[in-house]
Length: 141
Image (tube, rainbow, N blue to C red; front, side, top):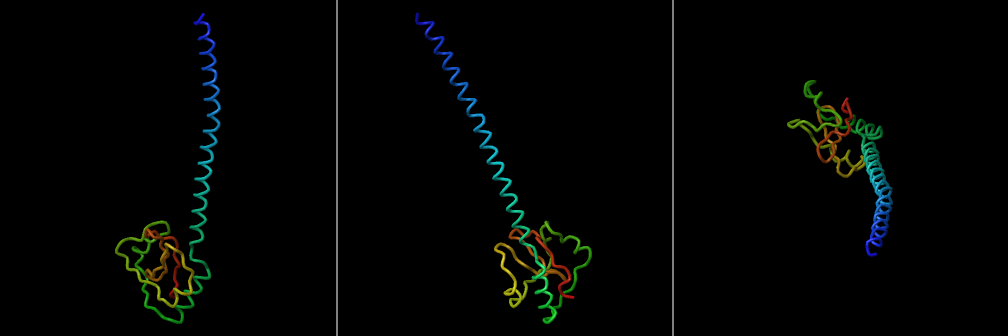
């Protein structure tokens, strides 16, 4: 008699394990979907943050007005060098860059982790890794 009692017990155990495994399937999918949604949300948030970190028209106006009254000798870069400066790419090594004067910096918004430099005849916004985020062209005309 001990044998027949084992068979139903074994079948019951297998059935319970199968139900348990099936119950975990949707839960794992839900967790994966949540993680995927979180990553997508983070990606969109970073994209929005980068969009905020553009040189706005107000900033361009402030820069133009300042440099119209405070002349600065800014020579444009040669075309060969200028084409190497592009949004989304690091500023090439060896390119001469200058800090903006303090009086104009205090008028501009502060973006933590970002810096503005004068490069040739343009003002360039760089992130902390040195990648060009935006370029204000022909500010010194």
